[in-house]
Amino acid sequence: MAEMRRLSRPEVQQLAQILAERLPPDEIASLLQTYLKMPRPLSTASPDAQSTLLGLYDALSKDTGGYHEFTRLIVTDACETDGRVVGSTRTLPSGVQRVYAVFENASSLAGLPSVFAVWRSLDRDQLVFAEFEPLRSSTPYNYVWAQANAGCPPGHYRIDLFHPENTSRLLASQTFEIR
Picture 1 (cartoon, one colour):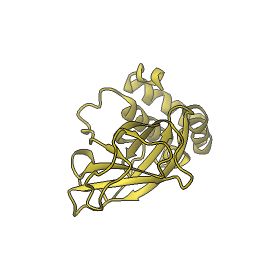
Picture 2: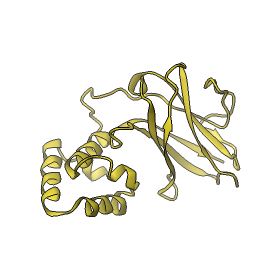
Picture 3: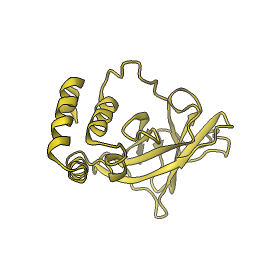
Picture 4: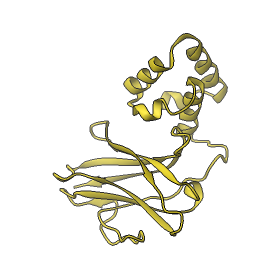
């Protein structure tokens, strides 16, 4: 992925066009899954390969061109139903069963009906959990969570929130540790 950041958007657009002409969409989705470990719902969400690759480039690019402002996430092991954080943050205790990502209904997440939440283990470079999560627009805060009935193993993790209609568009991201 770091190599993709070195390309310009027109170069990615040209590559995407060549791929779209030569490979069927399922094969492109498989390549994205294999080489970028991109979950299948993300790799097939866009209508064509060009949109998928350009969206991925935009999400990875350091320069989003004012395209959107990231929303800050607070990762915790406990929060109230109104989103008030009442637990540990950033470093969570080993064995925690539920991890929450709390955020304001503002910036890139303002007014969205849902988000696509992707939880990853950075140590294992592995998808832990991914799901479309509904949001409550009537409250100042929202949250998504991942459940591990046997408890979350120690390690470094990341939660990414993607736009529900353009799942290659990253809206918010936060790393955290369980120890």
